[in-house]
Image 1: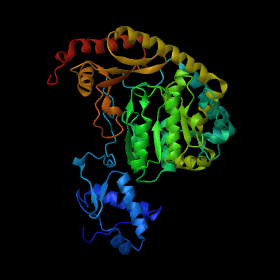
Image 2 (image 1 turned 90 degrees about the vertical axis):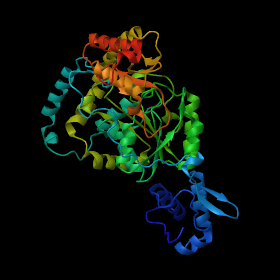
Image 3 (image 1 turned 45 degrees about the horizontal axis):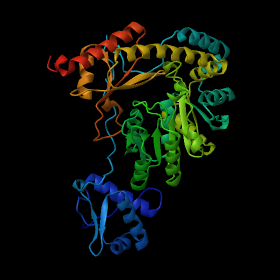
Image 4 (image 1 turned 180 degrees about the vertical axis):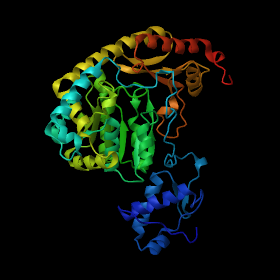
Length: 469
């Protein structure tokens, strides 16, 4: 390498900025595979640093799997063909595999929003009374949050032994906005955020839009692998990890207490912030202690009303360590424009009056009835389901491929999601699975009809689908 000078702008320790600069130039191809990095003494002289600082930067690059050091020869950039995990470039694909506008006249098995059980009439009444009681607040911007909004969040996020206090609560425009506000507030562009290979991938795509990078962590049949999480932490030093510990989307795996404890230990050792999405956990009433109970000092828990009450209300809250609260609230305002009084007040009234809880019970009963239809129709095939969770993770029999099966269902009038919709980044793993939801269609008869289509395609195999027709 000749005439190469690292870009050391930014904040943080000099050795970390140097390592980040070298990594960025490797990603861009400025420093090619096999290139020899400058001798530590020479580079120290060029940038006015100590040899020890350069040594720490090179060691960090070795931990990230980017270089190898050979005694007497120097430090060399590793190539992709050596079997070393190379950091992924920021993902520029943000759309996913769903159409921006859903095709008309298709059964919507690609949504897990709360089922329509008549909650519209309840919401209409609360909306009307809110407008009558607070005409001035509705006509203006919301700058002061009343205490009842925090109390509603504390009440709704409470589950098992986890009981957040109001001074940890941030009201948000849904769970997605809550998670993204936390990422924006507590990480900086270029930071890694860790995800499972399969997860609610719209978070990773959204994080990519604001300059965060994705680090993938392996999972098995019991959920996220703590050992691989530790490996990723040692190599890529993520600032955060996004998790759905209970009824994971899309696999429906619930982490055991032992795994949660191990994840908390690794996060504590490597100073990683945990984001716990409990949207589906709030439906299951699973007794497993929340991740927030194992690491309360570093866990942000997010939840809302979309899966159990009404997705259109955009009701959400997060609970976080009090030291993070102000930054997250400001970030949420910057990213969303702020909380609208009407929605925040309606959501708080629904929760505090107990109406949200009653709607939730009725939604669960409807989901359970629909899941009974699914289990009966798909008997004999491999799938995962939960009585109270509105989606199914279906393992496809040979020779079906996930994307091909999704297209076959579309041709027969049913919208489902292939596995690529849930991949947080470019992954070499293939799962041969699809996810379909049962909460969006209005009638149970539609559920039976849609699942019958899925069953028929499974029975017929690919001979029942012509991709050229």
